[in-house]
Length: 236
Image (cartoon, rainbow, N blue to C red; front, side):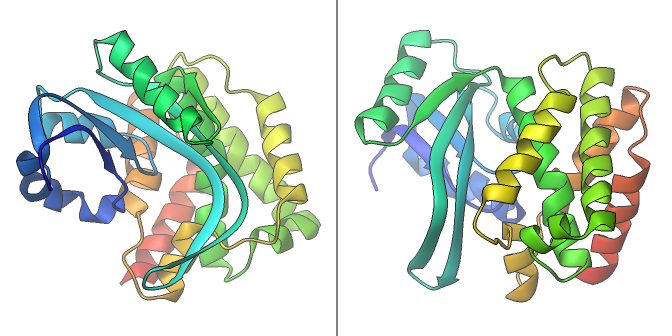
């Protein structure tokens, strides 16, 4: 592969330790890296690896599953948000956004911190709960007890974002995510698929890092801390 103007990283974050080997041959002086990865704190850690590389966060809204090597089952949804983390050239950022839309992929520019924590409102409850209870998203919401628990976990993410001074992540957004999931095709999130196929789970960036960041801001996500502990037990 030659040196690239734009590199899209779609690795699971459990493989980010490979980036110091994989990325340098692809980079020139003005290369921009788009991290289409789950979790909070990813860009900060990759920036430490590559201090001078402009980074963009990619947040996908898609229900898909890698069912076997070379095969992806796309169930529903198909959009991406791009959040500018450290790309100082706004023209380049807008051109990358346009590349997605020109390819027929719905894409939008969003504020970085707000976007990452909004994604966590869905990711943190559903990824871990489907693993811990060995179930799907639709079944979690059909049961009144787990539906309430999902809402409680989502509200912990909302309160954490408030402690960090991030606007736009609120109770109305929680209700929107629950309604969206009610309407969604019955789904096993990426962490459930990783668990089912004996692959490492992305616990660090989906749980450990946001929990640490929230605690440093003075807010404890008690129920999500318990869920993280259960996932650590199951990952052994």
